[in-house]
Each structure stands twice: as C-alpha cells, then as structure tokens.
Length: 445
Image 1 (tube, rainbow, N blue to C red):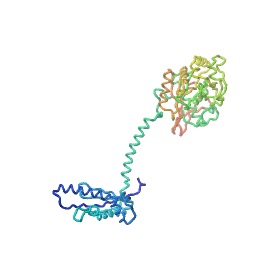
Image 2: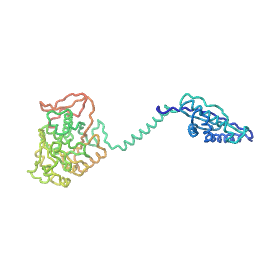
Image 3: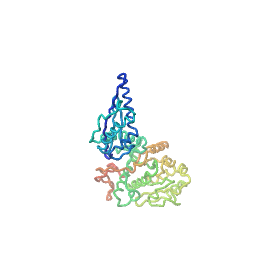
Image 4: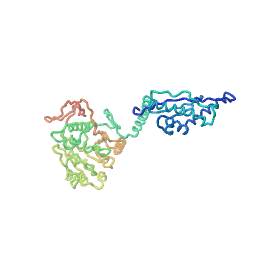
C-alpha cells in the first residue's frame, strides 16, 4: 500500500442546456436525459481524445488520454463529469479542463447543430487538488486485514483437516487409551549407542540414561507391579528410533544388575549388530540360526557381549527366505520359554509393524509390548493402525514411548548415577528438565 505511486484525481463539470419545443415537462426531462447520455458517449470517442491531446501543453496520445479520463453522466441531472487522474495534481487539472474545453468547441461540429440547439457548456472547471485519491492506506489495510483473517482461518481449517501429524501436549499421559510410559529427549546422534557404557558420558547421554531408567521403572508399574520377563519393542513405521530404544533400554537394565538379553528379531534389516560395532552381514549365527535348530546347545549360539555393561546381544543371524514363516512356527514359543531360564529380561527388537507380520508374531508371544513413536514424524493414522494391529493379536501393550521429544528449558530435578555408591542421587540443574525416576524406586525396579 505504501509503496504504490500516488494518484491525484480532479473533475470538471459540463452542463447540457436544452432548447424549447417540448410539449410537456415530462417529455423535456426524457429528452434531456437522452441528450446527456449521447454527449457522454461522444466524450469518450477517439476524435475528442485526439483533439484534446493536441491542445495539451505536454505530449500525450489520444489513447493514453482515454485511459486517464473518466466520463460519467450524473443520473437525474443535466451534468456530465470529466474526471482526470495523473501523478501530479497540476497535470490532472490540465487534462480535465482541456478535455472539457475541447469538447465544448467540437460539439457543434460533431452533432452538426447550430448555436440555437442544445449544447454542453462548462459548468465548473477542475480544481487543483492537494491530497492524492489513491492509494488509500486505511481502506486498503482494513480490506487486507479482513481478507487475511478469512484466508488464514480457511488455511488453518484446511491444514488441520489434512494434517496427519501426531500432536501431543506436554501434559498428555495417554494416547488412544494406552499410557505414555516414557519421553525420550531429542539428543545428538553421538549420544545414542554403545557409548552409553563409557565411563565418561556426555551430558546428553546422561539425560538419555535417565529417560530409559524411567521407562524401565514404569514397565513394572503398568504390568501389575512386576516387570515382564519378555518384552517386544515395536514401532509403527521406519526410522522412529526403535532399535536404539531397545539397546538403550537393555543397557539401562544391565546397569541395574538385571541379567538381560537383547534379541534382534528384525531379520529383514537388522540394525543392532551395527549399533554395538559388530558386522551387520555375513554367515555369523544368530536368532534365525536358533529358530532353525532349537536345541540346548544352540540356545545361546552367537550371543555377543556389549562392552562391560553385562548386556548380551543375540544378532539376527543369516537372513531366512521367509522370516514371517520362521517366526510363526512353534519354535519361537520354545525359544521364549527356554531363554527365560537364564535371563531376567529378554528384549526383542522387531521390524516395523507396517512391513509385515514379523512384529505382530513376536508381540503375540511376549509378556509385554511397548510401542515406540517419533514425536516429530509419526502420523496419527499410522499410530492408530499400529495399535489396531497389536490389539488384533491380543498383545499386552504396556505403553507408548515418545522418542525424540524436544526438551523444555525449565528448572527441575533429574537423577544421575553416583559412580561412588549404588543407587541414584538427586541433582539440581538450571535450564533443563528431563523425565526422572520417582524417588524411592529400587534398583531392582
């Protein structure tokens, strides 16, 4: 609005006089209106414009002059207005007065009339205006604001109707009837993985540790006071942090003295071996090998230790031609029963629920299932389909873990592991707030 060039407008008035000869006043009025409309049309002719342009003190074409003048016959009157617009007030005044004066001189020639007949005369010359007629900032801004309100409201409604993202408030405690048992903070990629077993952890890794200890404690709360012996970790789609959640949760359990086994049940695209620094391909034995020969001597064949954490990891093993068929056999039930004899907690990493039936088969034989979703990318339809698929298999869904949650800057308590004594000690930090394990939770929990 404020960048538009200023335009000045002024008007000259022509009076159309009438001669005698009318039988009645009504006929005279009708005749005058016809004459006024006729003269108004003649004023917009190319001949009048060219003649007016030749009389101007500055160069202008007849076509350009027609674009800058506005001719209007005033209803119920004998007046015709000649409006002119220009970038300078004096230029607009000159155009309007010259146009009106030229027509007064040309009207008899154009109409082939003598001086005694009806004619137009100059009623009022165009004044010199001082204020521009355009732009009108207040009007333009009000109209723009009104249009913006309607457009923004429509865009917001359209976006909400088409938005598939999962929106959760910080105070949300459950999703579709399933409890949120943990919120994993969004940390740099360097804070995820086997470095959690390092003696000197970065601050981001410590926050990650606390979040997974919180999840581990909640597993007992949501399972009737007893932590499940076998746990399947599933996700609705790919790249939602399911494998790193499995590893971090297993390490948190091992740090508390829980004898834990992490099983890579994703035989299609195994990732756990790469996370612990082992080869991700090759003929090395693993989970698929055990399911192919469920004998005692093969039960722990291929198990690998993760650093000094006490955690054991069973890689996926050679990729079978049909992983779903292998997981759907009775050998998976035998494996879950036998493996519980030597471990207090067995965590299964699984493929995404949308890939195939693999995750549903593992979830069906596990005592508990947790669903990992990415707080930034998981869509609500995908989440609903994942929960529906788990419920169809009668899986015991213990809760949802929100991954990659953006932390809020606030003052709060968090818990750190005291390297000098067993257990946790509270510590006060400013500027960060993470999920914490409730006071009084034992190491076993």
